[in-house]
Structures are given as C-alpha cells and as structure tokens.
Image 1 (cartoon, rainbow, N blue to C red):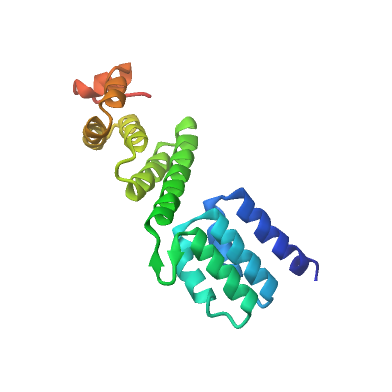
Image 2: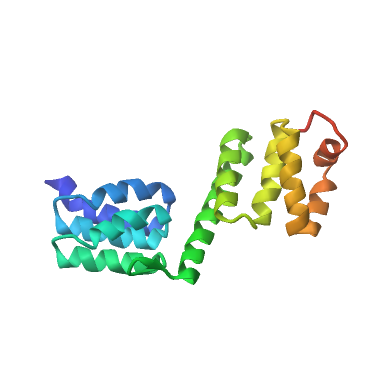
Length: 188
C-alpha cells in the first residue's frame, strides 16, 4: 500500500529535520512489521540524538533482522553508547543538543508571550544542563513575566554564579530591575 512505501522516506526526513518531537513516532516505528522501516527509524533516532531513544534502540539490537540490529548499533554509537555503557563525550554532546533544542522551543514560546510553556522548556534545558547560563537567564525573565518573584530570583542568583556579566545585563533591564527592587509587576 502507498503508506507503507512512504514510511522509510518519512523516517529519513524526520531524522534529517532533527526535531525532538519526532522521537516518539520513530520509536513506534521500531516495532513496524517491515525491516526497512525499523532500520530507517533506528537511523533517524541516531541522527536526532535524543536520549529517550536509548532504551528502545538497545531493544532493537535484538531484532531478528541483521540490518535492524546494525542500524540500532550505529544509532546507539551516535548517541554515545557502546555496548551497555555511554561514552561520556558523546553522551554529553547529546545532552547539549537536547538542552539547546529545549531552549529554542522556550524562546519561541516566550516570543509569543506564552510564558508557562516557555518556562517548561527552559526548565527542561536546565535539567539537562544545570550550568546552562542562558537557560537560567531566560527562566528568570519568564518567571518575572508571570510574577513569580521567588523563582525568578532563584534563577537570577544561579545566573550570577554562572555568568556574572550576563546577570548584570539582566539586572540592568528596566523590568528586571523593578523585580529586584521588590516590585510585583514585571512585563518583559
């Protein structure tokens, strides 16, 4: 059927795009009936670099088809896994990419003044990289925009430790300087 012939191409396209939102559909494709779809899904997951794919790819290394096992092994290597052990540099690179993807999504939400989704994305970036100064800066600003002074100040204090220059620049913005002085209204 026509949909079946498109699946490998869709998996390849999703992998090239590199969007983390493609991870779940690609993981589901690892259970597809056709070996080519499973192999393409594994390859795409490796290109995306999202750590959620590790466990399903480890399982795919036991696939009945050698091509799927090889594709899953290559994908795991791209994610920083060798055998059952992560290679630290590659795993860190994958974490970095994921954190930057969450930061980008958060920025997109904040540009539309969708502060709650922005906060969630920035928090995910900080969970992946606690030392991500830009994410702490944007979290401080977003929390200020929703008038959560305590959370804004928490991330501002972290930012001061990570990047004093960036913290000073934030403190010098009119809206954030009001927050620092105790104002309950802030508009970014």
